[in-house]
Image (cartoon, rainbow, N blue to C red; front, side, top):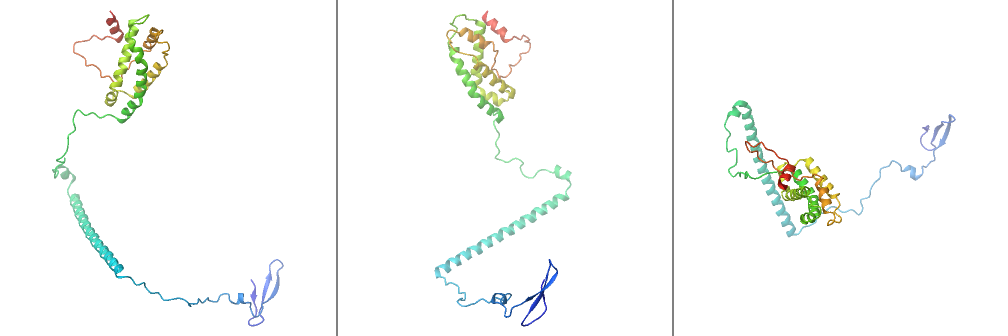
Length: 268
């Protein structure tokens, strides 16, 4: 850093040049340039043109409005203080009750009768016939309903043809009629069976698979191929008895017959 070696007029400084290590003498001009001489001096701001602050005069209407606002503000503050005082009183009472309960043993607190009614006087008892089901099963029923309805609509013309067709076979015809009747009954009581919970998740998946299997059977040239179509549908061995409650067993009856045996008996 340059070192000042004199004072007054004719100042000069000694400066060392770092790359060469030599000392140089720098003359300081006198007088100093204005932009250098003014460095560091305090700046005085002129107060010419400034006016003293004078509050704005308000009209009597504005003063009345401000007065009403202040009165409302003080009123609200008073109400708030009153509420805060009530809150402090309630907190003191609750704290006293908690301290009193801590002094009573737990066994005595459990054995003492409950003060006041444990059940409100205006309680309502639900009807015992009401049955509540899981939402997931009701959603599954709404999801599969369109598929079941489309399958029933597709089979209805074939079912309405009756038994007056060539190569009529009673076994296959009865099996086909049972499948359509079961499907119609399932659609009618779908929500009721779903709400009961008797239809499991696996049954919902199998139900959709059965409808897809029926949909793969071709119904082209129905009048000429009626016996073939009914036989193909009956051989799928599809049953729509999902969620049907099991029949009550009668005491002393041990005879159990299958569906095929019932069909053969009905044919005979």
